Structures are given as C-alpha cells and as structure tokens.
Amino acid sequence: MVRIWIAASTADAVIRLAAQMISTIVVARILSPAEFGLAALVLGVNTIMGAFIGLPFEESLSQRRRLKTAHLETALFASIILTVVAIGLSVVVGPLIEHWANAPGFAIALILSSLLLLWQGPGAVSKAVARRSRRFVEISACQGLSTVIASAVSIATAMAGWGVYSLILQRLLPNVLYPILSVLFLHHRRQRIWIPVRWHGERFREIFRFSWLHLADVGVTSAAPAVLSFMVNAFFGATILGQLNIALRIVDPLRMALMGVGHNLAFSVLVRLQGDPPMLVRKAGDIAAGVAVVAVPAFVGLAASAPVLLPMLVGPGWDEAVSLAQILCVSVGISLPLRFYYSSYSALGRPEYGLVGSIIGLGSMVAGFLLAASLEGHMAAPIAFMTYEISTTLVALGYAGWVLRRIPAAALFRITRIWLAALAMAAFIIIFYFRGQNENISLINLSMIIITGIVTYPLALCITCKSCFQDLIALLRKPRA
Image 1 (tube, rainbow, N blue to C red):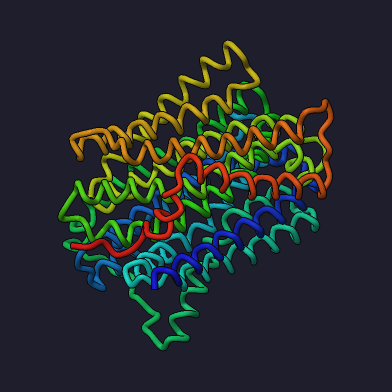
Image 2 (spheres, helix red, strand yellow; image 1 turned 90 degrees about the vertical axis):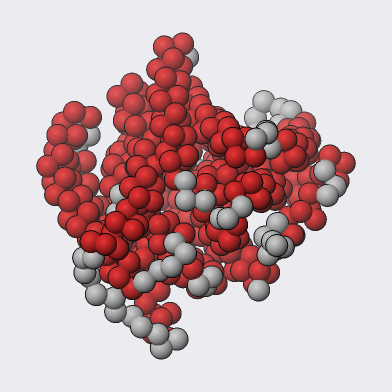
C-alpha cells in the first residue's frame, strides 16, 4: 500500500510541476515583469488571508485521535466566517495598500482574488478527512487534476488579455477545484457528501488550542513572501519584483509539490508515534534524509542548469532572474528536507515550535534584506530569502536536539553526504557545459545537462552515501513497535 501511495504522490508531483512550468512558459512570453510584480503583491496578501481560513483546521483535524462530525461542521462554520472577514478586509485595505505601494490595479485584483477563498475551508476539511483515511491516491488525483485545469485556464486567460488575473487564477483556482473534485470522488464511492455548517462551541474549544497556534504559525509563514515582495517593490520597483516572481515560479512548483506530497505521507507515519516523542523525531530525521536523496540533487541541478533552462522557459527579458533562481534553489535545497522536523512537531501536537521558527525566520529575513540592500542592493532579495530558510532550519534542528537531548547527528551526517554528491554533480555540469562566456541555450544542450546529472549523481552518491538509496525505499514503512 505504501508503494501505491508513493507512486501516486510522485505522479501528482510530476504532473503539477509540468503543468505549472508549461503555463509559466507561455504566460511569461505574454505578460510583462511589472504584471508579474503586481501579481506577487496581490498573491502575497491573499496567501496570508488564505492561511487563516483553511490550513490550521486541516492540520488540527488531521492530528486528532478522535474526530466527530461536529468537528467538521465547526471547522466549516469558522472557515466561512473567516472568509467573509477576509473579503471585507480586502475591500477596506486594498485601496490603502494600492496607494501606499503605488501599485495601480492592486485593490480590485485583491478583492476578486479574495472571493476565491470561499472554497478554502471546504477544501481543507475534505483533505483532512482524506488524510485521516489515508486516501492519498484520491488526494493526489484531485491535486494533480485541479492544477492541470488551473494551468490551462491561466494560459487561456493570458492569451485573452486578462493580464495579472491569469497569474492569480494559476495560483488560486486549484483551491476552488479541489473540493469540487473531492465531492465527485465521494459521490463515486456513494459516500456522504453534505456536511452541515454548524457551530459547536465545545468542539471548537477542543480543536482551538492546536488551531490557534498553527494559525499563528501559518500566518507568520505566509506573511514572509508578502513582506519580501513589498520590501522589494519599495526599494527596487515592480520590474525587479517581477524578476523575483519569475525566479520563484521556477523554484516554487517543485518545492510545493515535494513538500505538499511529502508532508501528507510523512504525517500519516509520524502521527502514530505521538506517544514516543524521541522516536517520532528520529523518524522525522530518517524522512528528512530520505527526502534529501531526491530533493537536494533536484534543486542543485536546477540551479546549475538555470542559465540555460530559464531563458528557454520564459524567453528574453528575464536575465536578472537567472542569478535569483540559482540562490533560491540552493536555499530551498538546504531547508526543504529539514522542514520535515516541523511535520513531526505538528504530529506531536506542538505547533508552537513552528511558530517560533516562523517568527525568527521573518525577523532574520527583514534584517538580512535591510543589511544587504545597504551593502549590495541587487542581491538583497535572494539573500533575505536564504536568511529566512536557513534560520527556520536552525530552529527546527534546535527543537530536534531539545526533544532528543542531543544533536540529530546521524540525519545531518547523511544529508551532508548527499550534498557532497549533489555538489560533485553540479561541478561536473559546470566544468563541461559552462566554460565559455556565452551559454548554449538549446534543447539539445539542456538535455545533455540533464542526462549528465542523472548519470553523475548516482555515481557520486555511491561513493559518498551508498546506503542512502536503501533508506529512501524504507523511509515510510510502518514503524515497528
């Protein structure tokens, strides 16, 4: 069964990555960097509002040992009220932010995008129920299909001249489609579809302790991209922000696919170890090392091939995005595997650990940006991004050491050996394909770079960490008592 889950989740990640990449390739050739910059501002604020509506309830419902229908009814009620509040806030603060940020069109785009949040709550509840039932094939199918449809709509609307709204639909339409597709799956299995929207004070108090802490964590985490976007817009303008946005659109699809799929699978394993926190955290280290086998070479390879890959994908006019994308890729490669420690803290019922990491990360990011902007302005954004990722990672490791009473040296040592193999692969690619002044931007050259990475990484990994592939296969097996 685990193999089926992993296969379905892998297919979901590949499909979503391909769909988002293809839509970005097309849309980047139609829209301007300034439109990408405006979309970054709108989606930054929208992400914060969306985080308060669905994600806290999804995690709270998923980690409960006993779940009643009244919990689901209460979560739907609370999410709808929060959505109404978010729409009202967008009407009030949208014009103020538009004036303050000098971003024409921001207000109406924020209002329209906030309307799409109405489906965030139902989507979170349906996903939480599916996660508890371990219907990961269904989750993967709904996520993959919703992303494909949203990507097609984004391309069509961009060609129709909708501008920034095509970028908003690309990001937010999957949230609308997921609960609809989930209902269709339930109907196909002839299971209950309708859940009344009701308030149960006692049930809300039962999920409130976890929810409000996780809500604060998600809120601060979601605020980080928005804060970075507004700082870049204030210091360097919408065009540079657009360059950063396109760099993120090269990195984010892979990061979101790996993290989203990996978190759901890992959580189902970790939540069964709630009664043994040290074992739970050790298992999180095993998962982090297993994920690193795939994630680290993927992001390092993406960074190494960016001078060829990015111009091929998005066309001319995005030169500054290449160096941005490379730093972002390395940053995510460092942090993504170790973020599964936060999944373990969520499974343990300790979302405050994530909240502390998010707060420290946000403060470090702002300080890093201001310092870099005063010294080396054009690198301020990627330096701030890397500062955030590294600082949150250090906090995660600090809490792991607190639970285990020692540094998780075994997991870190394995991940270090994986990094050595990935860096050897990157060095081989750079030596053989980027020795000249001008890169050969062609599909043939890109294919050769990819093939070289596929061949050299396993060879290097066999030297640095031969047992890592075996760990990847066994990382999500049912733990023994």
